[in-house]
Structure formats: structure tokens, C-alpha cells
Length: 234
Image 1 (cartoon, rainbow, N blue to C red):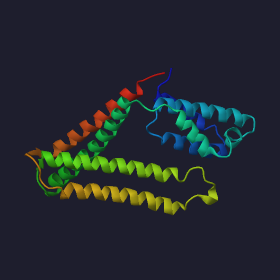
Image 2: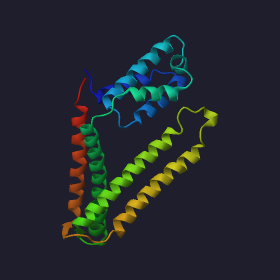
Image 3: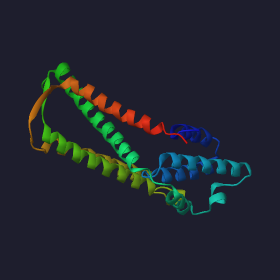
Image 4: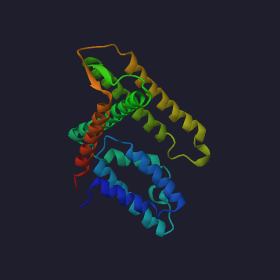
């Protein structure tokens, strides 16, 4: 009886037994199937482990991934994805909050750390920060939407490079530039939204260093949700 975390660990260990050709094809299959984020994580990882076991058995007989599953691995993986049950709405919502808490935790803690270092280390800025409730809500909502778009674009960018022969793969520098551009634009939007959103609603002040602890608390909540999600067993 294993949970998703244990299955992933076994997949990582068994993947080391693959030869170079089979490892490349299995990694493409693994990434393509995992990117289907609305599917059940437990079911997805269980199927990936089963696929890996089939590949390892075939490898012992001198066969390759394509010998087992055919030349069109992308179509085969899509058929698998279509058969995997979707994650329940409750677990999708929980996963969504996990990502949001992680993102907000990092942003708030980083903001607090920089502000604290600048004030206490270089006498720049102030010891307190003033916020408006409405502004915080608007900025948080927009930034979460940007984060969702960022994740979707990254997944799309990665999926385009899978299942292609080496000579047909996009130039590595172009891949890097594309990912860099997605990250830069996303971060730029977040920064702009944070600074240009007008003051809305009642205001309150808070010591800058307390933002670090608030950020850590938010990040900790994401880990609590993650551990509860992985606690489900088969």
C-alpha cells in the first residue's frame, strides 16, 4: 500500500536502470503524462510505475520503449491520460490553495526580508509598512491569475519539446530564451501590479520583519496541505 510520494520515489530509483535510449523516451512519457495536472496524482503515478516496469522487462529482452508502445508515443500517452480519472474537485481545490499559499508565502517572506535588511542594515526605507486591505485583495487575485497563466505557459513550452527526434528539437538557446521570456514577463506583471494598484479600503501598518514570519506561516500552510494530499493511500 503506497501513497503518491512513495511511488514517485520508486519511479526515480527504477529509472536509473534504464539504458540511454529508453530513459529518454520514458522521461518524455513521464513529463507529458504528469503535465495533465487535473488528473488524479495517485492514479497517474501508479500508471507511470506500471509503464516503467513494462519497459524494464522489455529492456531485459533487448527491446525498446517504441518496440513496446509503438512509434507514436505522444498519441499513446494521450490515450492513457484520457483513461486516468480526474482528480476530485475537493483535491483540485486543495492543490490550488497549496500553490497559492506557497506563492504568497515566498512573495511575502521575500518582501519582508528585503525590507528588513535595507532598513536595519543600510538605514533605507522604514521599520513599518502600510497596507490597504482592498489593495492586498486585488493584488493577490491578479498575481494568482498571473501565476496560473505562468504555469500553463511553462507546461505548454515543455510539452512542445517532447517526443521529437534530436535533429528536430528546438534550439536549446531558443528554449532557454522562451522560458526566460515567460518568467520575465510574469515577474514584470507581478511587480507592476504590486506598485501601480491604487490604495483601496482601510489601511493598517505592520513591522517589516513580521512579514518574514507571515510568509513562513503561509508557506507552512502549503506544506500542511501537501502532506494531507500525499497521505491518501491505495
